[in-house]
Picture 1 (spheres, rainbow, N blue to C red):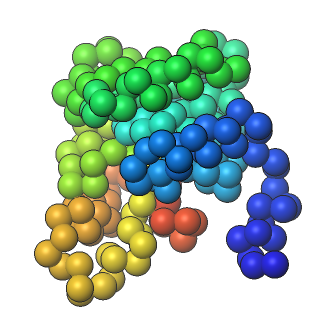
Picture 2: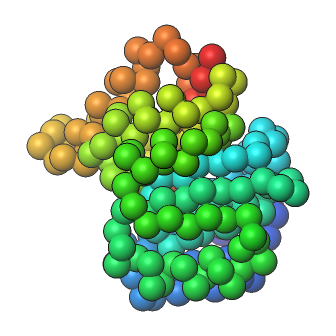
Amino acid sequence: MGIDDYILGHIEPEPDYLYRLWRATNIYMLHGRMASGHLQGRLLKMLVKMIRPQRILEVGTFSGYSALCMAEGLEDGGKVYTFEINDEQEDFTRPWIEKSPVADKIEFIIGDAITEAPKLGIEFDMAFIDGDKRTYVETYEMVLQILKPGGFILADNTLWDGHVTDPAYDKDHQTQGIRRFNDHIAQDSRVEQVILPLRDGLTLIRKK
């Protein structure tokens, strides 16, 4: 048994609905591995239960897996506002969200979060950044403006399969975007942060 299998065998089981979504994502969608999956999904739920946010902003819905996990952890009255810029994603993702046990806790929006999220007029308690890696800094700056003091930002894929330290990817635009983001956060006195080497790298950021 590998370490990954050992870990998955010793954490909260993946709910059947999420397992079926993960399978469908990998069968019917390109880049299915982008879905959060069992381990990260259970971590997202746990972090929501720990932070106890009322309003969560997600940038990058993809198939909806992470939004469902965060919604699972919300208390009554809480809501996830999740933005997906790729309108071709909607036909797959919307039915999975709307038929889920937590559908009433998720607002699924097609559009560019960088321009559209501030128009909601909401001060968020928590945000999950998992959209276009090339615009992570711009997304982060937008989120920081509508995040309450003491609020948390989670940024996914911040180790980018190890490419952040691999010179072979110096000209890759997405790798450049992640590196730029990591450097930007490391020098930002408005926040405190830690990178977890979980899966593809997850950065936890707290706004001071």
